[in-house]
Length: 119
Image (cartoon, rainbow, N blue to C red; front, top):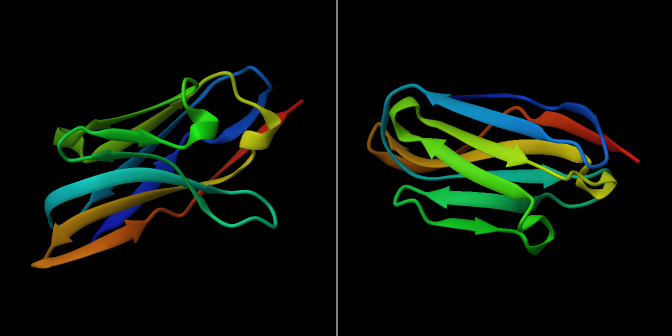
């Protein structure tokens, strides 16, 4: 069984920074990709950033130049460094991991962590 544990959310003023982390544990054979999504109130969940097992990174246009995704493969952990935060970055941030475990390729979700940016 695979579990994802997120940490690092909180309340910050506009222009501030936060660093999110998400650690995957369990009988993991290989991780194909790790990413972060967010969901603002009354809006659909959207992709924020993703990093593949090969190290390729992609970002939503709204966060390019401000957010940085990285991964520690030895720890099965993905990070999201968020700088110059804006009120529109407010939402619940979810970690998503695409991996192979017990012979099956599946994606898993973290429990979500609240990020609130005040103006």
